[in-house]
Image (cartoon, rainbow, N blue to C red):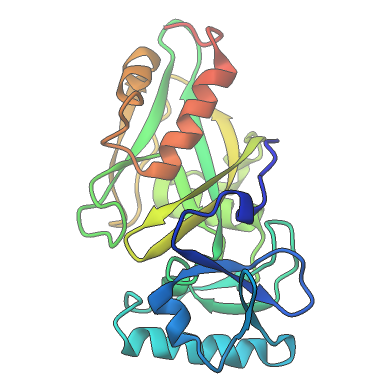
Length: 258
């Protein structure tokens, strides 16, 4: 498992840290316009702002309403994520996932890399539907999805694998956890932070993932040499998927052949 540096060591210029009283690690980070919206909801501190722990849920609900009114947040997604101080911190409150980037909140995600080993080594990549709000038309790992508040990563992986790739729960028993990666980068709505929990699934040559909803347009079997070349620029890949797939190629080395 890869260790993550503290957010304050990776914070881009122009962001202030967001804390909850009593926590040593920040829960997020915000730009100046977003911080202005938080006036009266979070108290200033030398390196940012702190929400009161006793009224945290109410403060976050009010922050979301203000962000939406100010046009600083995309429309609600109807899916809540847990607000945590640090990637292994306890869930302190919940907020709609649309607020993740404006508030720089950490989004925990599951990723499954389905691969076929041997001389014809390849990876099944998902092509995201063009109607998706995020990364339309880009390539993703075989299965990927955010972990909703109150759910475990394992539960989320099983549900996403069924919906996106028609992989049954029994088939997922063969998947093995292989990495934990992270990503911090400016996004279109603020700061994008991802805690990427990665599994691998060895697939047989005759297996083919099949989408069950319109989130995924289809699946493409990519030979490893082609994948390695495409990841040099990764222009056609969802950013988090590029990190996961580069890590997989580095871990495999020449073991897959191809």
